[in-house]
Image (cartoon, rainbow, N blue to C red):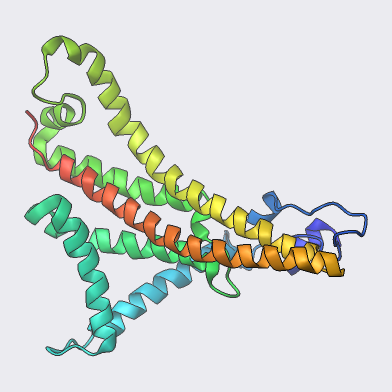
Length: 275
């Protein structure tokens, strides 16, 4: 089975399924084929592939969940409303209010949306039939980081004006004047370029690495089947796959939380008056 056929027929693993240990073929390690997907449909000039579809479905799932929970809110909440309120308060109180104080109230919808959207993109990695984190495609973390960056810049200059915004970004207060010759360019590069870059790369790299690890042990489980000794190896690989999947669940939630916390931190700094 060629890799091209494997991608079209099974876009999850994309490896030669007839290759096993002790059959004279090498281990079919995951590669770029594991992240390339044939178009599922075409809408005008736009080709829709699996990650795009997962992102859209994820958005619908999130909106549907909160709509169902809060469409008819009750004083004594039902189970669904209680779960939704708990999740909402986790971001509202644990992130926005904790980091930004009362100034963070206008940004709660943004932070809640970012947290659950990133989490949903990550969660697809362990959901049957999907089993692919859309955030392991660099375009999605970059797009989210750009939204954060534009918001961050807009709030900075709207709060402080142009001159005050530049001071806020590049000139920290309370330091000896000679040190600004070195510190100002560093702050400029850090706040304007490094922050959005690291925000995107951190999410992408963690989800990419996690997916690769799960793929390696999933493929290894199949690859080592076929003999008694191979089945023993495959059993150990399968156990590691389960362990990594549970660990990945933790990482998925953690990365969504880190992305949201960093966004709140940047916005908090943007709201500070320049000194």
